[in-house]
Each structure stands twice: as C-alpha cells, then as structure tokens.
Image 1: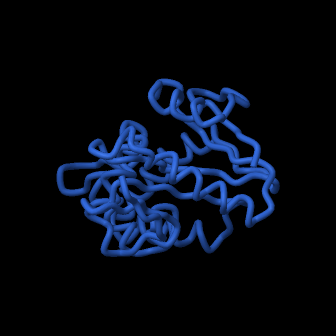
Image 2: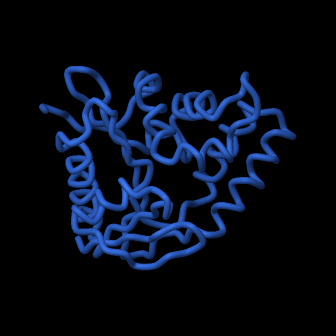
Image 3: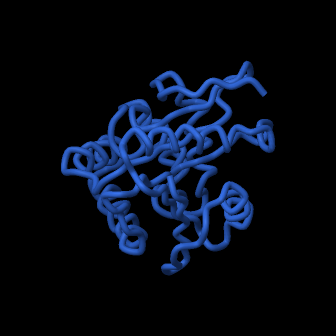
Length: 195
C-alpha cells in the first residue's frame, strides 16, 4: 500500500477521530461518553478540530492512502506543560457543560494516575491506530518508523508506550516490532524499544 505520513489537519477529523477512538475504545468511552448527544467520538472530533491539546490535530500524524486517512499516531517527549493541559481542558469545557467536564476530569485522572510520563531520554507513543482495511499492509510499522525518526531527531534513547493488558492484538504488534515489556501497572503494560 502506498502511503504518505504527514502532520494532521483539521479537515482529517472525520477519518482520524474514529481511529483515535478505536486505539482504546473502552477506555476513551469510559472517560468521555455522557449521552447520545455528547459522545466520546463527538468530543474527539471537537478536540481534533481545535488543533491543540491531547487530541488536537497539531499533535498527531496521519497515514494517508488513495482511500484517505488509514492510520494515526501521536507522541510526546517530556512532561506535558501547562499550556498543553490548558488546551486540553479548554477543549473539554467548550464541548461539555462545566459539571460534565468535571466528571470527565475525575475519570481521566483515575486513569492518568496509573500512567507515568516519559523520561527525558524517551519518546512516548500514543493513539496509534490503523483502519481495518489497511491492517497488515505496513501502515502501523510506517507510523512507528516515523516516530523512530522523530525520536532520533530529538536525541532520545528509547521509545515507550502503554497498552491495556487486554489488548492482545496491540501487544503482539508491538512485540513483532521489537518492543519489550518494561513494566506492568494496574491494567497497562509499558513497552519500550531502543532508538
């Protein structure tokens, strides 16, 4: 499959946000789902189009084929700063009511407490997902290779990522790409690979 990997754009929302949701659907739904009018996918689409924060297009790369967006990934390489947190919070409060946003924050914090940020020598990968029609065609590997190049450019020593223990296909995928288990923490496996 011929693909191009590029930074995300606001116009990618319709194809990219379902992929982000599929990367950890039960987890994301448990945090953001409120009612039929305010779904996790609705929030992700809103946040993507804003551009900044955890789910914004400016923080994601997409794999594009002749059929459109077929993969997505994000990464970060340090503790995320106040501006990033503020942008994520703004995306929540501009989509949800204040009470709903508070509920989302509490749910998110319950998950976040079990996940540690990358060390200064690490690049953290997240939201990696490939469209069903593009699986087993090298898209996921190409997205990881793009993050590898980013890690090299940033002089990182390792790439790391967290996978839910129950996500067996993702675990096998990362193991196939040379990632190894670094630790297990309350339902998540931290994988790492040398850069």
